[in-house]
Image (cartoon, rainbow, N blue to C red; front, side, top):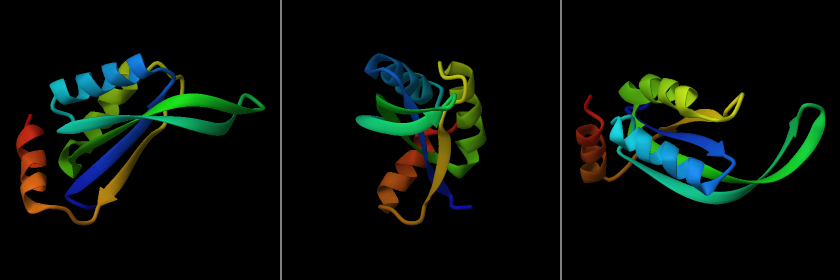
Length: 105
């Protein structure tokens, strides 16, 4: 696994996304989080859905990924939230050092 990851989740309102983002950063689960409006198409309970959502993109270390996943599961409003972890294969050294510093428990 890469030393650094981006964890992505979605939620149904900008306020809920901001609350998740603030909570993650406050808990040092991620160094930073961006909230982006998106349009999601998916199948849920037998129907194809077309809904506005807000994506939360969280940058963190691989060592904090399990903590972050559990934090999101506990604070998310969805029954089955999207929580995916993507490897960061390269990055600016000073930025990655900042990720390390901001995610120390």
